[in-house]
Length: 333
Image 1 (cartoon, rainbow, N blue to C red):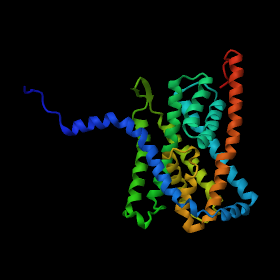
Image 2: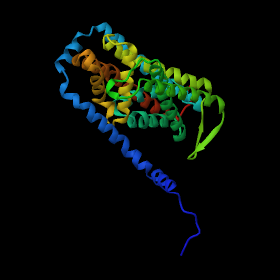
Image 3: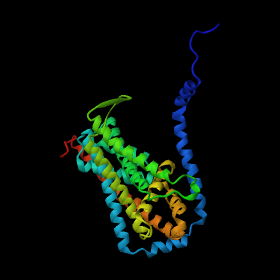
Image 4: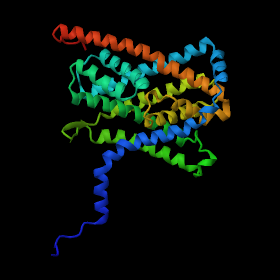
């Protein structure tokens, strides 16, 4: 029996199938891609000059290490302001000092144990103990993530557009490729600010949750704070590499390593940071010097702040217990 219904277009059918399968594809694609990238990068592991790395570490003067540690500490403190921007946007009533402390401690755990532990689980626990509901926590965390990567795009886009970074000859891509990518990243950052201005006060409801863009002033603050944070991270590595490379190139390699670390499902990106730096810089500075700088960076930016993050976490837990014991007394703003 013939049907009178119109035939379903093949393209529409394929699109529907892909849309239905996308959650499963996304779940596995990122880890697989990350493992492939890691395997390619770690293929150079046998070339590491450990003796040279140890010698480079011993040559660092105390003043330089203290200066690098100061920049790393300032970067972590600045990251805590990301959640303060979110606090102003969603207008929750957790005290400013507590909001900042939650963000800083979570960031330290995030760097060393992965985003699911520090960026999500720890933040959710600490904010829940401070009296915030899941929807509010999701907005604060989402805005913090957006702040981090919007500033990344602004800074990386500026570097690409200015021609600070050039593609290697083996990339087989025209010279204007990175400039085009940089212009696109800058356009996205500017578009975000313009969208915040155009749709200020407008609300969207997505999966039962309310979504509202921040004010243009807060959007600009997001870009400035995040770009400054990435710049400080690059400054730490610039000092540790002995200022032997232009700051822009040092920052660019760090930002590339950060992206690879995100797509690689390994806590703290262990081995990823080292592999990226060896792959991109060992031909210019020497294997041992590069590895020594990366190990020093990991100690100053990852491990030492984790000690402070643990202290902040214990303080926050103790404070929450006291507040619960006192019947949830109102915090001073």
